[in-house]
Structure formats: structure tokens, C-alpha cells
Image 1 (tube, rainbow, N blue to C red):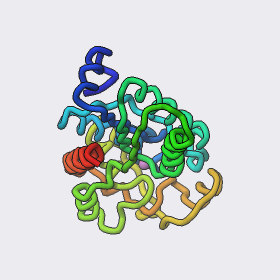
Image 2: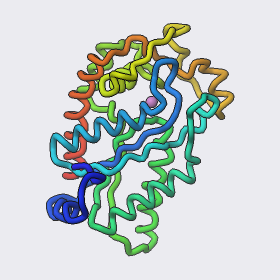
Image 3: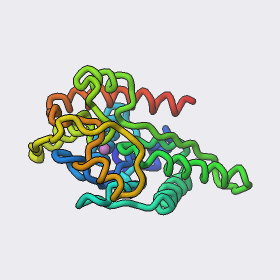
Length: 246
Ligand code: NI
């Protein structure tokens, strides 16, 4: 059930049977020579909708922008500051909590969001622990690709070369649902430099010249994307239901 395509009476009906909400979150940032700028939020949204369709869970509109300051030296990338993203997460959760949603399951597509969104969850809990009388909420965030089935497929298809940014798996998933936008590009070197610490945007670009980290997305294909989609939807449906039962 997509919230954006529902009416308020339909949302009220849903809340009589569930207080869970899936929130896709990603980024708007470069994904190497053949990856789409929207990869992280489109991937997260695609998996979240797959889960919503398979088990009838409500799926909120996607938080498309994320914490991407380190990608800003590449055209088409945009960031929210950590402080901005924390407020975005807080206001969205508090809004839906007013209506009875209590359990917020964020399906994430972008590693740069983790520290900030986790801190935003702690702000929500801290406000309540400090005496705010708002209803309790529980939040969890997981990568769409973190489940055992999709991890096994990525390990099998891209042993040692899936990478850390512009991964072969995330590019494959995007190629599956955006087949009209599959890009072909030379990867030089074929395998991107290994994952090492980085700082601001110019430093990142100096270290990772074409934007990729440790990946070879020339291996990506829409057929791989379908395998990953089917696996990740089952993984995430299982993780969501475990979270509701926790
Ligand atoms: Ni990504």
C-alpha cells in the first residue's frame, strides 16, 4: 500500500490493523560512469514497494535526498547537511506518529545516511526519555541489500568486486527497473580503488577519480537486477515483520 496513492480514510483503515510504516530513503549523488544519479533512492523505493505489494505494508513517499556531502565534486550530486536530514527524519516520523504509526522501518540505499539517521532516531528517543509526552516510537534502518539472500547473490555474481560505492549490485537493480536508461561506459581501471577513509568532496574526488569505490559495475545487468530484486524483497519483508514483532 503506497501512502501517496491512498486516501486518508484508507490510511485510517490501515492503522486499525497495523502501526508499521516503511520509509524508503536514499540520496541524489553520482554513481560512477554508468550508475544513475538517483540509484540510491530509486533502489530503496523499488524494494520498499516490492515489500509493500507482497505483504500489504504501508510505504511512505521516499526521502530522496540524503547526506552526500562527499559526492559534491561530481555534477548532479546534492546533499542535505546532517543537521537538515536529522530534522527531516524527525518531522516525518513525528507527523506520522500523530496518526498512530509507531514502528518506522527505513529501507536505505546510501551508506552516508547511516550516522545521521541513526542520530535522528536517538533524538526522537531522547525527547521522550527527557519527558516529552509524545507517543513512543520505534525506528530501524537497514540497507535494502543487507539481507542474507541478496548478499549471497551479490557475493556469487561479483566475488570481491561488488564494492562500496557504485556497487555492481545497486547498478544492476537500477538497470532492471530502468531498462530504458542503461548506460554503457569504459571503467578505467576496471576495478575501482579500494575503500579507504575520505573527508570533504574534493578529497573524495582525488581518491576516487570516477566516483566508484572498490567496485566493477561493468559486470551489472538487468538480469542480475531481477535476481537481486526478488531476493531483497523477501529479505526485507522478513526483516520488517521481525521488527514489528520485536
Ligand atoms: Ni549507492
